[in-house]
Picture 1 (cartoon, rainbow, N blue to C red):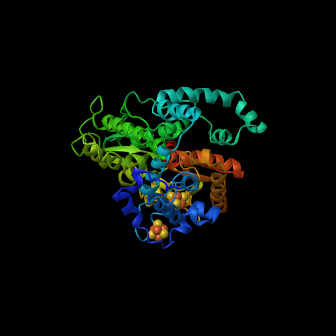
Picture 2 (cartoon, rainbow, N blue to C red):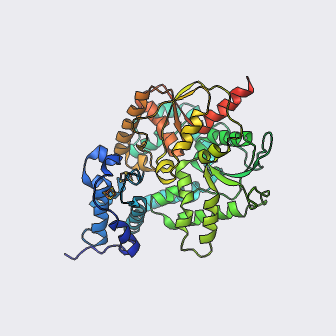
Picture 3 (tube, rainbow, N blue to C red):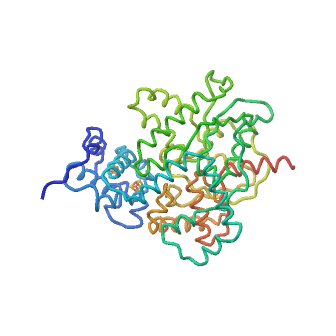
Length: 442
Ligand code: SF4
Ligand code: SF4
């Protein structure tokens, strides 16, 4: 039998250099959620790197068993901060997934569903809102309760349905900037996201109010679109690049032009409130590094980007004074923690809210099993990881679970129901918003 031919992407000097950084020490194993579930080397970072190396040297075919272990990876990147050799595991797994996707022949139905979700729906906020309105009707007339009680859906569809939260009754109006309240401190552009806007509109509303309360005029560049995270997660690299270019145009050269900023050009900051989207937005410079028309613009865009926690911890001009009674635990978003390295700011902000008692998890760095579409395609493993997360949460006795990413937020709402916990899931800005509201009634 002839040797498998490795895909070009896995034979580049850059990919080999990334592979060679691994010194096989195994210190990453305890950090890996899939290793905790399976206990097998091939489902741990070191084993997956060995598989990538074997595929890049043509010793094994990329699809088949190798593909299975690569696809079982959450891409949570919890293996990166603990690695003494600085292995860029995220870059390795992303490249391997793109090569896997290129080598795979997907069926007509799968291609149609994927096109519908990734190209025709997620980049278009109004289409998503339209579909969400019908989903809300499904909830209002009791169909959701019936479907859940009868429990007849196939596994993947059931997993998707389970993630549907109580849907919003109304949405923010992005047609006009929201004015600063009190003394104006500057102007920011808000990246409102796709699923975040459609499913968790209350989080975006709270974000806008909190920014206004702290003296910021909030702008909503009209041509912004989905960040491209889900597209990258399934190996659709070219589509993700197109979305990145559209966002760069929307935020760097918006119509109408933004007011002069403190730094003299454009907005003072581009703010987003979802850890996963923010991580992808911050990787635009890497994604477009070979595009001569956008490489420099991508760097300018990234230089202005701030996660809402990063921004507020530096610009909490109006400290919250209203009391919010909550025993709260914070569930780190993997991409906020491991990719953006935003770990302390959310904790500092929580501790700044009067009445909030912060109780840390035993494993705050452990993924909840959401991971893009992982909880829909790898249902059993995602549920095992979620169950471990919910047990950790339950042991804190928290009545409030604080999330800072859309996927985690939806997964934890489903997790509360699954674990029968008496707790609410909120984004951190919702607690700040509640504190400001409570203060106004004092
Ligand atoms: S910790 Fe880093 S160097 Fe050690 S096995 Fe894991 S990836 Fe390789
Ligand atoms: S990214 Fe997460 S699931 Fe994948 S190997 Fe690293 S720690 Fe394990």
